[in-house]
Amino acid sequence: MPDRSRSSIALWSCLVPITYVIHIAEEFYGGEGYPAYLKRLRGVELSPTKFLVGQAIGLGLIIIGLLIARRLNFPKQLLIILGAVVMVNGFSHLGTSLFYREYTPGLITGVLIWIPLGVVTLISFKRGLSVRRYWLYVAIGIAINAAVAVITLKGGRT
Image (cartoon, rainbow, N blue to C red; front, side, top):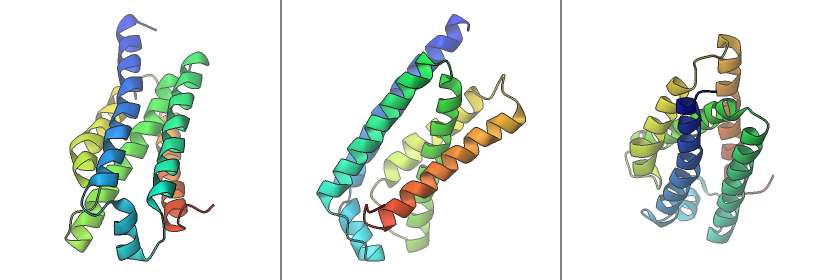
């Protein structure tokens, strides 16, 4: 792998967890906070503690995944998956805000950071992958986002 590609992978591998922490901070502190917003909007009980524990688990899984992907030589593939996750999450915040015509905790970082990061990631790491594999990784990212949404709407219960 050329040095340029390695440096891009290293940069993106740092950007995803860093932007995750920024996004979670906005979800927690933005507006009424995501747990209160979820309770008001959908009647879902998700305590602030459960929210933060879930996010800490998510962050840990991202970091462990990135380390394993680097070690086993599939960082581009995981970055495409994560790019799809963050992009879809950003669009989810945008869509919900537009639908309800109100601020949703996570909207600002979703639109200003995660949608662009996701799009650029998906474009940047597409080269060298078959079309079929590329869309498989994107689909996995979308499925992860859907699974997280289902768990969230169940109040953190699996």
